[in-house]
Image (cartoon, rainbow, N blue to C red; front, top):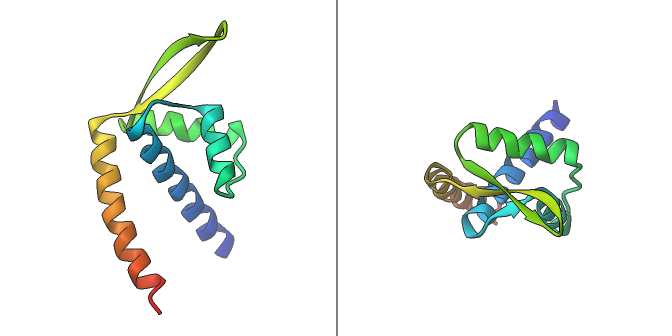
Length: 103
């Protein structure tokens, strides 16, 4: 059970992290894998891309394609719905962190 909770929390943090960056500027998969790695999250494309697709299907992200260096790259940008849910998540995260990490 403990592993399930840790994995669920981990994946929730990844979703919030993606939304955070997608609000700031368009992101793409490899860039997010590298960004998440910098924060200690080891993500494979097989884990990340379904998350991106799920966020898009839920209406939190919108994607578009661009040719970069002769290759097609899919970028993701937060929608208004994604911005709203990120703002709500930030409020809940602040509240939770304040309580859980309180000395």
